[in-house]
Length: 189
Image 1 (cartoon, helix red, strand yellow):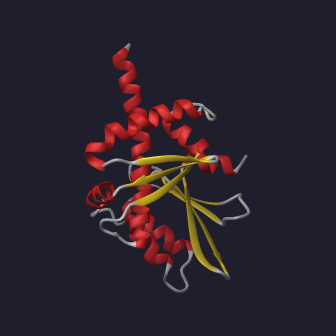
Image 2 (cartoon, rainbow, N blue to C red; image 1 turned 45 degrees about the vertical axis):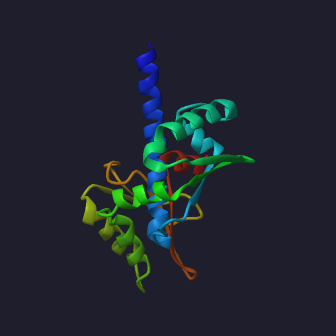
C-alpha cells in the first residue's frame, strides 16, 4: 500500500513539475534568461489542485503536498518558496531552478519559433500552423468558440507540447494565450 501511495505522489508531482518547467521555459523565452534571478509563477487554486490530483478547496492537503514537492525537488531546483495569496499560489523559483530549466530546454525551440512568427508583419493563422507542423504533422487547429480567441491550436501528441494555444489576430496585433486542457475546458463552462 505504501508503495502505491509513493507512486501516486510521484505522478502528482510529475504533472506539477512538468507544468512548472513549461511555465518557466515560456518565461525564459519571452523575457530572456536572467542568470541569478528568481522567478515567480502563479497558479490558481483550481489548477494547482488539478495538477496535484486533489479536490479543489483542499488547501491544507495542497500545502502538505507542496511541502513534500519542495523537499523532493530541492536537489535539482533549490528551495522553492510557495505562498498562498487569496485564491492563488505563488511559486518563487530560485536561480538554481531557473538554470536547471534553462539547461534542460536549450534545444527546445518551438516557443521561440512561435513567438518569432507572431512578431512578423502580416502573420496569419496558416503561418502559425506551419510552426506547429515544423514539430509534428499531427496538429489540431479549430476556430475557437470562445469570444476572446479566434483559433485554438495544439499538438495531438501531448509529449511535444501539452498546451492549447489560443490566437487572436486583430487591430491590436497578434497574440496568444496558452492553456492547460483543464483551463481550456473551464473557459467553456
